[in-house]
Every structure is written in C-alpha cells, then in structure tokens.
Length: 130
Image (tube, rainbow, N blue to C red; front, side):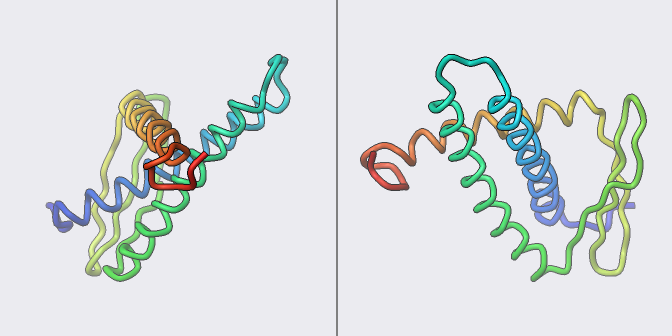
C-alpha cells in the first residue's frame, strides 16, 4: 500500500541519493589527497565545489522534509538490494532498491553536481566569478 504522495517520495528519494553522493565525494577527496596525481588542485577544487553544491541542496531538502515530517532510513541490505523505510503521516512505507540502480542514480547526481559546480565558477554563473 502506498502512503506517500509522489512529491514526498521524490523529495525523500532525492535527499537519500544526494546524501550518498556527498559520501562518495568525500571518499573521492580522500583518495585524491592520497593519490599519486601530478597536479591534484584542479580536481580537489572541483570536488570541493561539488560538495558545497550538494550540501546546500541537501540542507534545503532537509528543511522541506522537516516541514512535512518526512524521514527516510536504511532498513536492510544484501548483495543485490538495499531497503529503505520512508516515514510520513504516521505510516511506514518500505522500498527496495537494486544496488546497481542506486549506483546509477548517485552517478547521475554526481554528473549534475559537476555541471553545476563548473557553472558556478564562471562569469554569469550562479556563484562568484572566477
């Protein structure tokens, strides 16, 4: 039985996968710092901008979720699937995601963040001109 409205599901899902993308960015930054790259700075700067963009969006999503009393938590995991519990209106809705599908969603968010972070650094972009 579906208890969540589509808009609530979209909001909570975006928050969930964006949080995963932030984790990936942080891990990649650590690997980059420890890696044997000749020139690390451009990559580190891009990852930093991506994280800033992601955290800014996640903060706004969190605010919207709090206003709607909406939560999402991981409830289980195996080799193929990860389960999440969506909580809203006093109801629980369990959803299972195929792990390769999660990876693809996070990858798409990373590409989106990459484009946004590049635009924010250009004149006419949303951030400081550089």
